[in-house]
Image (tube, rainbow, N blue to C red; front, side, top):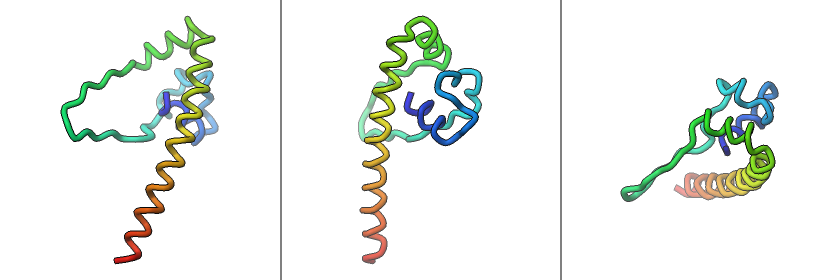
Length: 91
C-alpha cells in the first residue's frame, strides 16, 4: 500500500484509484532488513485489486491510514538523513 501511494505522489500518470492499470509505475518506497529470522506476509497486486473492487469502503480507509503512515515514515527518514549528514561532516 505504501508503495502504491508513494508512487502516486511521484507520478502524475498514476492515480491511486486506477493504480492497477498502471502498476508498471509502482516502485518500492522502502527496503527492509531484519537482524533475526522474520516471517513476512504480503498481498499480491491481484489481491489488493480485489480488495479495492469488493470492499471499497475498507479500501478507502486503508488508503487514508497508509497516507498518514507514509507521511510519518518520510519524516523519520528525513530525520535519519539529517543525523547521518551531521556525522559525515564531523569526521
